[in-house]
Length: 309
Image 1 (spheres, rainbow, N blue to C red):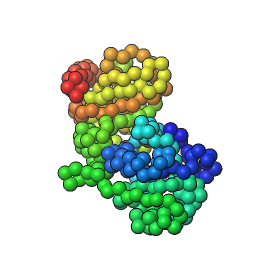
Image 2 (image 1 turned 60 degrees about the horizontal axis):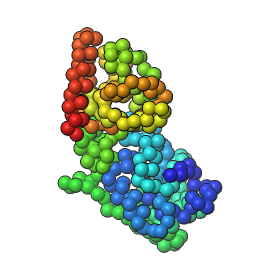
Image 3 (image 1 turned 180 degrees about the horizontal axis):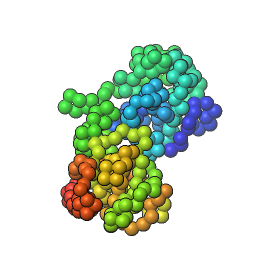
Image 4 (image 1 turned 30 degrees about the vertical axis):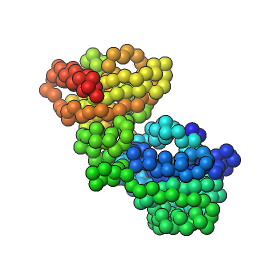
């Protein structure tokens, strides 16, 4: 998959795609129906038009973190779906100020040269969200590209949405989130240096930051882990603590992952950690030994959960 971070100056090979447009936060089952419709719509390379940062981050920079995945994780997921071109457009004052007509002409036609555009039926675009499906269809007729609007996908009267997935994760219901995503909710990123207390306790962990990501319920999870880079690329199981480490006075949430039956140095490598089941809330213990005993019990419970998953 080729990644393009502007809509101008593209090579001829990157123009003329059949594109799906959206934020695709989580790349859930609803998103995938839009992507598959774009794949079927035209005999052309499959492209995704999305935005970085997320427009909500631009318009409300002080709002709490809400993203289900960072741009790296989203690109990895889209690549696995067979996307040919990812147009990760820089969202700022220029894009935010374009009218629907200007967006269609300058970005979709002059920039990307799209042959077909596919969106969800609730799609809005342009300055002040002035454009809707009817506007996009008329612009397509005027400017020479096709438009497909895909009905929202859901079950039991609830649409699959990033909002519903965030709520499931906040409630500690990763399996419900998985049903809407079509895959495990994964936290991906670089392993950073921590306090190394886990190693001292006999439970070494790989530490990952949660910067700018929506926080699932704080606590302990049974997880599956893919090591994406480095000499130890592998898939394994583990137990993870997501929280602020109240035992040691920390207050910046991070993810600490213990990989079962693994010995190696993962600093600087990138992991993909899938949340399988919530085990318990984060807690503060009376002593270090009580904490160590609880970690051992958590690991045993996680192994049992994952053996039956």
